[in-house]
Length: 86
Image 1 (spheres, one colour):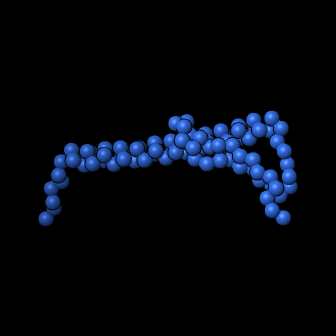
Image 2 (cartoon, one colour):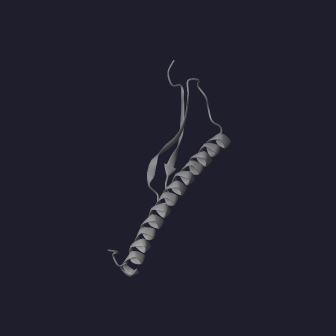
Image 3 (cartoon, helix red, strand yellow):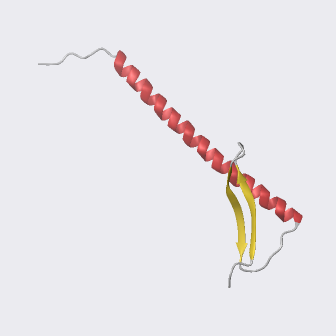
């Protein structure tokens, strides 16, 4: 038995880039009413919001790590050299 139902809503970033689709598939034939089509679009929007939220979190984390490394280097450069014990 093959695919008998397919419905999809586009996954579009807030910048307008299209990444793919949020799909529903089934082996049984089905039909979506207008409310179900709106729910499918809402689910696609929620999925896209989650994707963009994760990207923002990763970007922020990477920037924070870079800034910590910069501050550590600055701190190390301002410390006086410790005399060597003989």
